[in-house]
Image 1 (tube, rainbow, N blue to C red):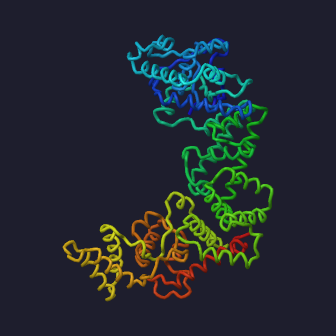
Image 2: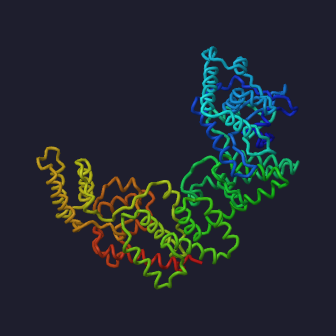
Image 3: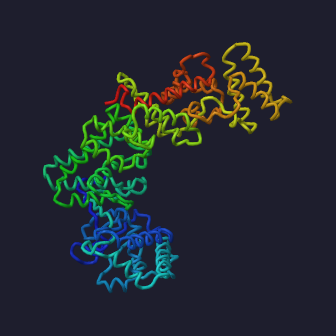
Amino acid sequence: MPSENASIELRSINRLLVDEGGIPARYWIPAYQRGYRWDRLQVIQLLDDIWEFIQDSEEKPRTSFYCLQPLVVRKLEDGRYEVVDGQQRLTTIFILLSHRSEILALLGKQCFSIDYETRDRAFLEEIDLDRSDENVDFYHIYQAWRAIEEWLAGRDRMHALKLLQHLLNDDEAGRNVKVIWYELAPNDDPIAAFTRLNIGKIPLTEAELVRALFLRRAAQDDDTGNISLRIAYEWDQIEKRLQDNSVWYFLQNTDLDVTNRIGLIFQIAARMEGHALNREDYAVFSHFSDLLSAERSAEIEWRKVKDIFMALEEWYEDRYLFHVLGFVFNQTAGRLPTITELLTDSQALSKHDFSKGLRNRVCRMVLGNDLSAASPDELEEEITNLCRTVDYANAPKVRSLLLLFNLATLLEDPRSNIRFQFDSFKQESWDIEHIRSVSDERPSRPREQDEWLDHCLKFLRTTEEEDKQALAESIEGYLDPDSEQRSQESFEKIDGEILSFFKEATDGPDHGLANLTLLDSRTNRGYRNAVFAVKRSILLKNDRSGIFVPLCTRNVFLKCYSRTVGNVMFWTEQDGQDYLDAISRTLTQFFLGQTGASR
């Protein structure tokens, strides 16, 4: 990264036109850059985006602006700015201003200039079709010129005037266009910075830009460098903690920026300061740029950020909050409004009241009403009815019930230190799996039928019991490539024998909660609606191998919920009823605050 002496600020396009002395700014594109390469679509997309902002800005505050990606520069001894990153956007702005130079003059502005180390600047000053084939840079510059001409052709002169007015408004006029101006220190290596930003494909992230803001402000506040060093150290410690997937996936369902997860903390901090954080690019950077440009101490503002992280970490460390909040974050996809609202609640409430409020929030998610809306008996009846009526067709509801059942089960005994693996859960795809096979999902294709029979055969060959061996021989006979018995009718016959043997020959499909559990998609789709005994064998093998299996899924196939164990190879109707009763009982105790780990 560039040195901590680099400066960073939001700078309007208007300020790009002139240098500190008030004369037209000069930008220099060095030889290590590849030259201008934007195509027609990229140019038009930029114009469309700016125009959309202009249309929307009439209903926004005067201070609103459209933010372009960072322009990374280094000032040279002769006063020019070496462009390290961002030349595509800078050149496109130059071409646009050149295309409407008469409007620029009308507004009393002069355009900046661009020099190339390896190209003649004359082409930029007078873009000409006849010279567009001289080299690839000139070709793309001419195509950009044509794209701008095409975009403006469908609009009248007032549209072009309005576009350039907003593009060139200063900050006092507002509703303008800005770039993130990132100026390297004179002794920074521009080629190293360019390599990181372009060849390595590691652009400056918003979090890194915010970091630069804090370090710059800290250097202004304290010339000893102590504050800067502490912020840099604590920043790295927070990022390191968030790189722990068990922490990250407790808070979030996905990972959009694996290199700078600390950006989440800044988003939360901005929201808690009242920033709406709409979908504008660099909204968080804009918030902290305004904050730290005012008379605000970097040390104080950093402490606020750190306090947010420490609150989230406290939630993670608290076993009860970890599981209940983990459910809430999973259901809401870790949306910022939910996190900020809960942080505000946790600051205002006692731990007991905060925990009770969480159970109430979960109750609304699962049952659709508050805990106070029903007596304990009515709540138990409502949960029991839900468990009896929900089925496979309502997969989201089933998934949330089964996840909550797993979490509430882990909280039943306060002596337990087992924690749900949200990281494994969220990085896998999960299916709602039938515990015993269902008749309306029999394999229909020959290959699927063979795979299904092969799973059964492997299980049957693990024992020498006579009746199992007889069935195994029938399957082997069918699977023999030379067998003359291979037909749909033959498969249905042997399929019926297998279901009858494993006591899974039912009159109709069983898609109720009593026959459903959570299973990772890879395992589930690998055995294709196998019978209970085969599923049990495969799942327990996965469990022994360290593959994550949710506790309640494991308990199902170990028949832990069955009051009478009987034959562990079969899943009976009574097993299903006992399982359903366990779900209802566990969820009721959770909502009533009767689990061992509740507050």
